[in-house]
Amino acid sequence: MFCTHCGKELLPSDKFCTGCGAPVDDAGYEQDSFPSDDTWTMQSAAYNEPYAPVPDRMKDPYNRQRPGRFNWGAFSLTMIWGIGNRCYITLLCLVPFVGIIMSFVAGFKGNEWALQNNRYRDMEEFAQVQDTWNRAGFICFIAQLVLGGFWIFFVLLSGLTLFSIPFLGDVL
Image 1 (cartoon, rainbow, N blue to C red):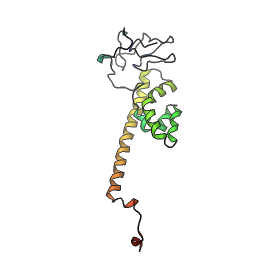
Image 2: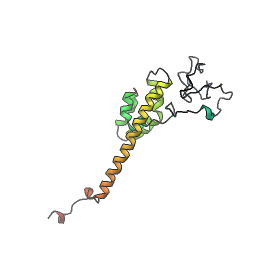
Image 3: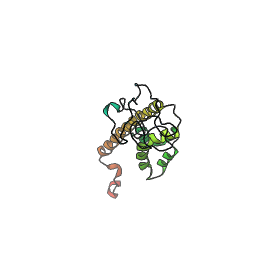
Image 4: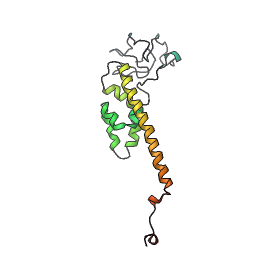
């Protein structure tokens, strides 16, 4: 079955379309009721072609979080984001060598996991919550880059003497 709003293929368990965020009824078809124009989903007629591209007037005007978008909160704050959004699979970031991969997986799949594991009133509430996580995660990512850059700068400034082994002649 496909979304009548954007043409994306839907799973029978989907409550919202993962492509456009339109609500889906129990039979798997998009509901006729849409949020108002001030939300990020806009009203339009259904497409005749199931794989038609989304026109520019239908694109997200507020650039809000929705399933399928990268989530900086899930990427930068993987463990905290996972606990806060009931996505306990992100605790795999504590396993050595899996942690770095789990951060990327959580960044790309996080919005889908959050939508499945939480009960949001509507897509607007989901977008607000995940936008907050997204901003916090991006700020943390930039802070990590700045602190890492300072650390590398000071290590290079010290002449890498922190990692050199003293010779016997240096001790005497």
